Length: 336
Image 1 (tube, rainbow, N blue to C red):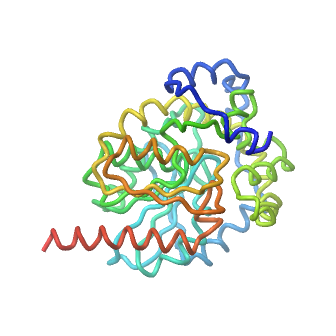
Image 2 (cartoon, helix red, strand yellow; image 1 turned 180 degrees about the vertical axis):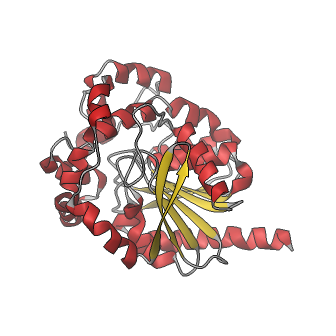
């Protein structure tokens, strides 16, 4: 099914509870816990490239432990700069932010973690990876680093985590960017949602060759060559992590109701950024976020898919820089 096939399909606006019930009836909801217990990290081409990517992004590789998870994260920029925390999305890692970090680390101290369960951070078969739990881990992580408040940008699932963090720890969030974020129902069904309800998760590569499909869903059609390159570099690791991703996706689905309910509690200055051609989370979600967070502002980037910071890093850096610098000026003035 193409994005054209689903873009004109209107949802009857079911509550997330109804969507959870529909998901629970698909094969995707059956998680093989025995297979998860046997899973171990393996070396891959993408894993060997990660230190080189960090160096190019100007980042230092750091480790800390939070709630039984060893967390790997990037720390870049000077310690006297405003802190900008970048939270990646589902099935991804901190490397998603490499282009953006390279453009912004001279103006901000950038902290970009591998969320627990992803990248080089720990996965525990007995742990909960719901959005609200991950947000609490992020709050504890920032406390350990001595960061009392920061600007937060989250992509996709990371946007839902960032929103939950802002709702429950408002003093920690000076400004919030929700980038193609999960947490609200759009008025049109996306290609990903149509696939999931049919029992196919297009964001999980069960075999290396399926990585190409993941990036076809995530990127605008003009970025297919870039997606093909990422697919070749990351395919083996993505396929190896498929059991984990299937399990964590279920936790994500079952936590969307709580995220949605918490959005009216978000008081931080909020900027909603989206790609007009997103096949993962339809651009109609922008209006839903603006309805839930009335003080939020929004921008939709043309000819852009689900990952603006990868597809259009310069444009993304420009708008984030303008938004966060404006908020920093306000905070600085209030503290004088």
